[in-house]
Image 1 (cartoon, helix red, strand yellow):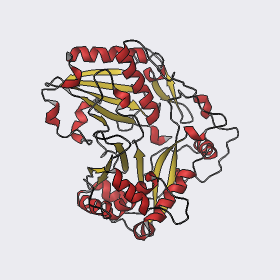
Image 2 (cartoon, helix red, strand yellow):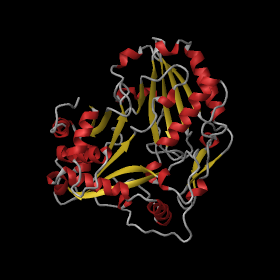
Image 3 (tube, helix red, strand yellow):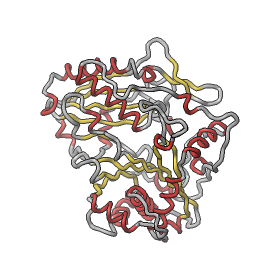
Length: 414
């Protein structure tokens, strides 16, 4: 899918109390462990190229492999400010090539790691993994294997990695059973995209307590008695608040909310191998007009999100594969769209114990290059299953309105 043709940048901070090692030694240990783990995870050491029909394939040649960069900073980690939410100022902690093209994945290293040593003795690991090779769960599996191998000094892979990409071959002939509005080409006839991209959006982060999530879930229950999940409710509330804050026009314009659904539990005929770390996410899409979203009941919007989520079945996933085979999208569609990415179920912290304890922060850095993406993150200061951090991009003028709309049922947003 065209939306996977990106690198996902993340950073992990390890304070000096956890490292207690010479910075050069830390980097050497991490580099050696990465070399070991790239043997079973060999596709990460290759490169991507595009075939005639627009598909990507991994190939191998000389002078490839992962890119590992060592850096030093005269700052201390404490100089970076709060390590509880993403901060665009941390961008120098991940490596980018000079004049690197946006969205370029062809002929690029598929793992780019930067270890930065700070004056205080702590260090950060800035990581860029190519989304074409793995989804979030796959990335956690890879990072977990790297961390376990670092701790043990010898290769550790549990589960054993699996690269059965043929599992997702399209059917012959392709059978597209659904309209797949998530990929539909749409004219940008609203003010949403222009407002965001031309106004230099800023990244705002809010800590959402478990109590507030429960409140929204209770308020958002659809009237049909079938209930909704916390994600359905929070996604609906965030979508509604975001569109209200941006004052999107015209009111009859159709908006889209897209989000990823893990396809692994959907696949039963046959089941997918446990160690498969490629992309198994399917894009769900809810649609409604601006007026229906802004003026409608929260329960109605939550119902739309729930139905979009439940519509992702095994047959829908197979239909998606066939749709892309027949009509492969060539560009990202932003018109009238908000994409919510849920990272709260990823083992961001637990998978990243390289032997120096858990990181004090693990997650993304800067969402402003993709301002129509919202991320739900685990809160590093709490159990990941309780409070979460909501990160979203808005124009400066809309930021205060968004906070008011987000917290209108409670004053507990911070």
